[in-house]
Amino acid sequence: MSISEEELRFGFGKNWRRYLEGLNDEKIELAQQSLENMLAEMSLKDVRFLDIGSGSGLFSLVARQRGAVVYSFDYDQQSVACTKSLKQCYFENDSGWEIEQGSVLDKEYLKSLGKFEIVYSWGVLHHTGAMWDALSNVVDLVDKNGKLFIAIYNDQGRMSRRWLAIKRVYNRMPASLRFLILWPTFLVLWGPTMIRDLFRGKPFYRWKQYKNSTRGMSAWRDVVDWVGGYPFEVARPEEIFDFFHSRGFQLIKLKTCGGGLGCNEFVFKLDK
Image (cartoon, rainbow, N blue to C red; front, side, top):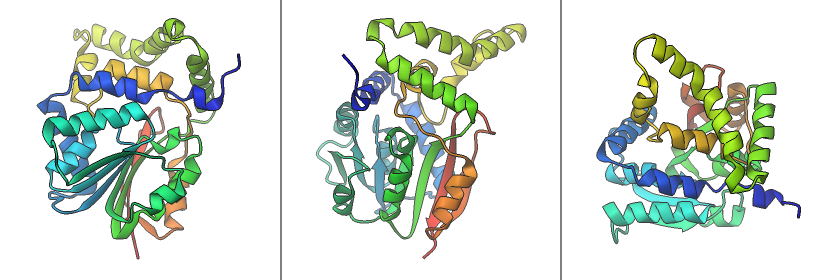
C-alpha cells in the first residue's frame, strides 16, 4: 500500500509530549531569555501574541508569563494537546490564553484571528509542505508596527536535498525499523563532537550542556525531531529578507546558523 504525502507527515506532537516530561523552571527561564533577546521586549504586558505552530506550548507559556494576551494554534492535534496541558499546569482557566487546532495554510481561519503585535513561528513554516504560501499568509497577521519572529531552515544546497531524501525514507519506514536511520544520523551529528570532547578530557561535555539550549529541547529529542521533520523546505537568508522587505517589513534582528545545519532566525517589523 502506497503512503500519501499527508501520511508521511511527521508527528511532532509525540516528540513534544515526551519533551514536556522533562520540562523544568530552568528550561522555562532559558526560553524567556531567548524570547526577550530576540524581541527586545522586557515587558509584553497586554501585547497580542500569536504563536503559530505552538508545539509544546513553551513559548506561549513564556509570553503569557510576561503578560501577553496569547493565542496559540497548531496543525498537529497532539501538539495542541501538549499546549493545553501546559496551560492547565500554569494558567488553568485563564482567559488570556486561547489554544486551538488550525492551519497556517487556511486563509479563512487566519482571517478570523485578526492582527497581532507579535507573530511568532519558530521552526514551523518549513514543515507545512507549502512554505512560501505559509510565509505569505503570516503577513496579514502582523499589526501596524508589529513584529514577526520566524525561524527557517538554512538552505545548504545539495546537503539539504540529501536530508530531504533521508527524512522521506525515515517517515515511510515502520516505527520499529526507524532506528536504522536514527542511530546512524545521531552518529553523524554528534560523533565528531563527542570525539573532540573525549580528546579534550571532557567526555560528553557538549551533550550534557545541550540542556542549556535556549530552545529548551534535549539533545536526543532534537535529533529525533530533525530526522523525522517532514515536510521539509529550506531557504537562504537573503531569500527570506527579500520576501518580507518587498512586503513592507524591516529586518531588525538576524541570527544565522553560520551557513550550516539549522535555522536562521529573523525578527521583522512591519514598517507601515
